[in-house]
Length: 308
Ligand code: AMP
Image (cartoon, rainbow, N blue to C red; front, side, top):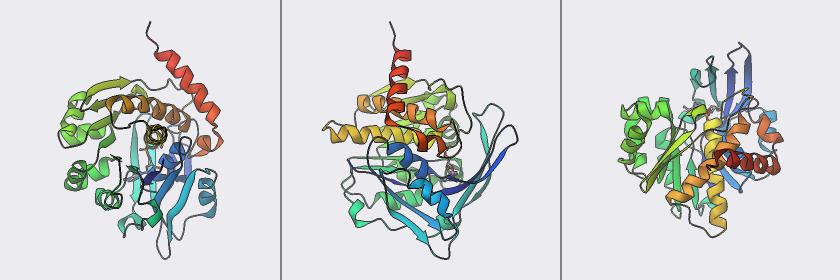
């Protein structure tokens, strides 16, 4: 069942706690999301890069056969989005070193006509006004979910609040939920966000898992206990990719995808894909991942969660 994602494709520079620097690697919210979702369902991508986008980074995307890149624009005369991040000692906290919006600050990319019937829409991290503009193209949607981050909360809050009134779900980090609501307690922050309009809010807490606040209930899930954390970049986007990919698969099986129970089950699939992403830089781990690896770890995780 067609899932469409809009967001950034980036040239990232990652600083690890050991002082290692990895410049010019493939990143971006749309990139990570699409790669993760592609293990569950075909995924349509709408994004824009500049003329400077290196062919070898583009080739990495092509290693994911389930990603439809007809909506990827290479804009002549423009520069690609670039982001730099530095992880602090515990790997769970990071600071942004730089954000060069470049082409993201220009006009959004066109949405291919063939994508407009997409029933599932994910608005990965980008300017909330662009997210809203993109949302308007998909009038046959059954489920639309958005992500956001500190840059947009700090500088474009009104656009973000307008978006919240139009989407079914929001996925964000616990510190972003606090920044947006002023509430330290994760459940209280999630409930305050629900009051702005969505059916559900997923608050991610890194290595401490996530909570789901849905109009019909509350749930919590631990993270997969990962031992080998190399680069956490993209964990949030791939979490969302696994979650939405699972929902797309459910829809293809003729099941509903908006209930508390459907979203609750989808969280586990997001958790598992994210646990692979962090085992290497960029999309390197996902590019080597198999459906069998995912199945094996999902079963292991289910055994860990069994009570009694
Ligand atoms: P995550 O670790 O899941 O939060 O995602 C990190 C990815 O998001 C990186 O690959 C960045 O290129 C991208 N990114 C960083 N800042 C932004 C932003 N303000 N808007 C959209 N994407 C961003």
